[in-house]
Amino acid sequence: MSTEMLKDYQCIDFKKLLLLKGKSIGLKDEETHILLLMMTLSDLGVRPIYPQKIAEFSSLSIKEIDDIMIRLVDKHYLDRINLKIDFKPLEKLLLGMKIEKKEEVNLIEIFEDAFGRTMSTMDIEYINQFKRTGYDDEMIVSALREAVKSNALSFRYIERVLENWAHSKNYIKKYQEEEPEVSEEVRNYNWWEND
Image 1: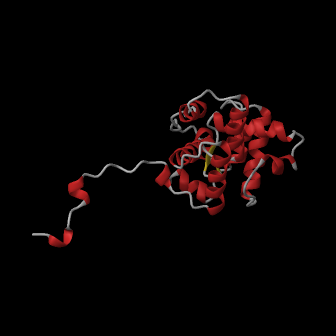
Image 2 (image 1 turned 90 degrees about the vertical axis):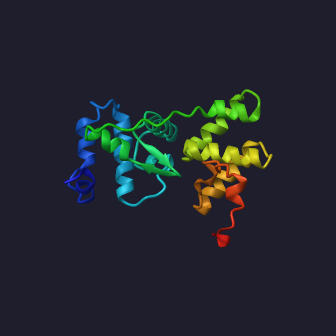
Image 3 (image 1 turned 30 degrees about the vertical axis):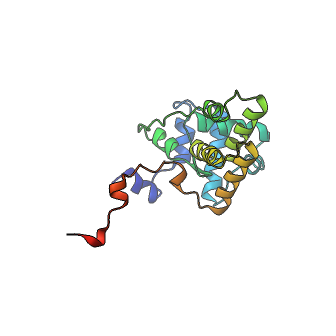
């Protein structure tokens, strides 16, 4: 029986595994506490899970919770995919499975290249705010590309693009991948005039 099936049938209690193995996979106590709260809120159907909601059940401040959540994503215990929290990397670690390393994206470098200047502390705070809101790196880079295409290079514009994508829930990967070049012969092929 595969681990996915065991998980689907709720044969594996990841909360207990987290309590017992948290230290061995490098988690601090407050990180374990926040993860347990996040898993519980997720099980209860609370979405999205954000620091203010977690603070209702924790003695930690909202800033501390926010910092811990960012740290958990940065250390690859959690993934954020289109504003949703994914516990799969943590579950794989708890089961002793290897997790695929995602290619690190240096958002500041990418923004500096696009803007043609170094980022100020205010600019870096904007980027951090995008991350805190729950946008994943790919989505942020895609919004930046959209701003470049529209010749509207401003953080407000990028923020609006991200908000529109989040509200419409219609974030399409067309902005993540450039269209491949198609030769003129293929583009102008008349299929109805086939020999």
